Image (cartoon, rainbow, N blue to C red; front, side):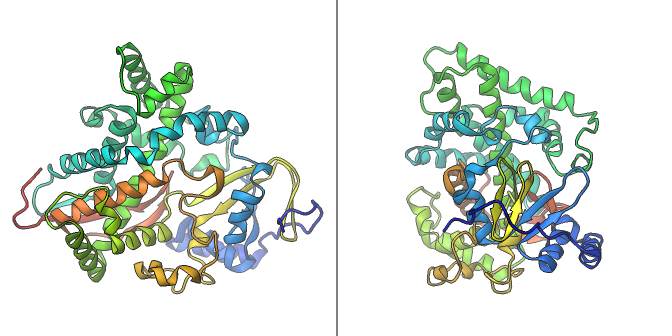
Length: 445
């Protein structure tokens, strides 16, 4: 039976003084916003109000909440929140539109990420991984967050835009980071209309890059027929609407892969047994040969590592919706216009569904354990008709890049331990610094 039966019901619980004090202590005790949300979840359950001035919302956690928002009642909620920076940045990008307009744009974009193209994509993933890591000096300390961002950017722009981004990396690097900060949680949460000086130039550089890319492709005779940019051009969209889709894929596509790759390598670098098993998995599948699309299906343990990384540190850790009508979830009423936040992070760390939820344990995703958790307890890419457009791409990319790096390097974590930080994705902070040593007999790229 649907969770929505009638709009009458109890008001959503608000934190009392005790719950608010616990959340405050968690926030100040290096837990940050994630720690505060967890404290409120522990005190109030799967449904509670977050009475933050300027960002008052209802927070939902758990598998039933995910089912409610992502499938059962998805048409009762809007993705677009006009006052949010992500909407101001992406304008009419597929991520922040609703209804038939969204469906039409997504239908145009989907073929560019079809599995039939993955064989060619794997070649790009390998070449770009080698290009970035080939610049590492043996034994150098590298920040995996920065380096995996370089890898992800080059892979995304070549596969989807048909562009070699390596020559633009240095000139656009600061603009990319500034764009990510623009849509990351910050003071705008409690002051939505706050002035945001310092961003216009960086955002303008991003627009200029994308408009130049569109103009250059329009000027080409013939051109490509299978990449995303070609499909957008063939659809008849104007340049502004195409730019919105490219910027959406550029930011959302590369930043999520960046976080996943950085966290996965960092977790392996801090768990020796998992590292040995992952390396043995790659050795068994490929030996010294380059990873292939067919071969990555044999990477059983590395697949578990990736899933466990996504569980612990889901790149898109929160989802936000606006109730389009009065709705009811369980016994609680949610009035129209309410912002509803569902926390993937809380669901993935809930001890009701995950034993020792804060422990890195890839074997919890062993095939024989698949039936031990309910549906919607693991939703790193969302679910339903609006699940992540690039979910399959991201998982292939993660296996290919991680396998390639494990073939060529050993990694040892150094410096301060990484902790999750809420940016546009869930980033390791203050970075994920490791010492990277090239394996004996492996030449540079």
